[in-house]
Image (cartoon, rainbow, N blue to C red; front, side, top):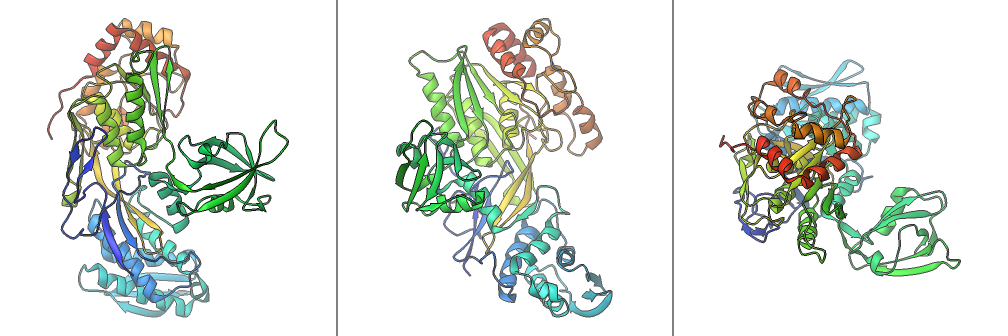
Length: 550
């Protein structure tokens, strides 16, 4: 099995930001494989992506074998022990992981005793394996595989389990105790996440299976389906001549996706048209659209729903078009990041860069030397310093928080809404030999002013809702003009919070408690603030901070 480690935000060749400037970042010495961009968290996350690619992968229904197990665990254990944000005991990793076999057969038990890994069945000792005397992940992999072999000898249930069931049981038990963002995904789940982050071979539609057909909810404007005349509200009845009645959503997706430039044939029913429509087209590389823009009362309202490989590029194009619009540039921009769960770290840097004319964006810090990174904006504000208001809520997380903190701390935008989620860690993603993934917390994020985002989040300058606190836009504007309802004065205390001051962080989050709502008052207030130049400058001045180097 050929494997390669690829590090997404440290590459050994230049890539270009949305502004077209080359950014060079060095790669660690052992990362010699040809690099390419991988896809985003994150959910987390903000995501920093590290992947291991494999020439071949295991079938989801593959039978268990020691050699496949060896390959999986040497890859996973090495990644976790070298990369996790805190030191990890390989002994605890191995023994804890093996106890995950209890998910398959509850009669099994594994314990660490006198330098040996003991396997018990029905509380009786049935065998043991010598523990390695050092912290060598390859040696601990060997011990783990031998212990699994013992468990399979005494448990018919484990012996009959497919490879994937064993991998999932062990990796779940290894990763869950670490933190809530580190996890294992099987091949099917991981493939779906990669599709969102990096795109996939498909036709470019959002589609939902129903009782006897499938409803096309939306059509990607740049995808093959749009070019073939497919429309939202069309209903798909057949694919490649087969009726889709009785299919699952998974069946539908598998039939529509495939290798780029391969063909797919399907039949549509269109409202108001009696005859069915036959469509034949070639699949293309499709990336889910995450950025949309519209004009309201002279203001450009940007909705960004996630951070995938195309998000920054598409957003920059949309902003540029608004700036040269036939009706003239907008009065300002509202960047709606409410309920945006985040995504790729590199893309969050690119999105921030669109609205900044230089300045710090974010800093990452972890255990591994490679996790220490500083990200800054290049010269050139695509929005030409027009007013910017950012909308956030309690489900704005990760990459969305990076962008918000960067614009707030650099005095570039006013933030309104509620306290954000507070997900300030960066996850690395390892692609395993079975095409599954390990998502592992790799570093912490610091805002430009130096405070740690994790478990704190972003404090808006204006708290618009939460716990019955919702007021009308008119009332809020009047209060703001008279110096009331402004939280900007609390930002210095927020930014001065210590990295480990958990109690104080919890108290601070009560200033504007997180709320997942997206009330109309947020947008109405944002437009009113942009329309009132004096109020905008006042709020911006109060929120601005000198970016400290920490």
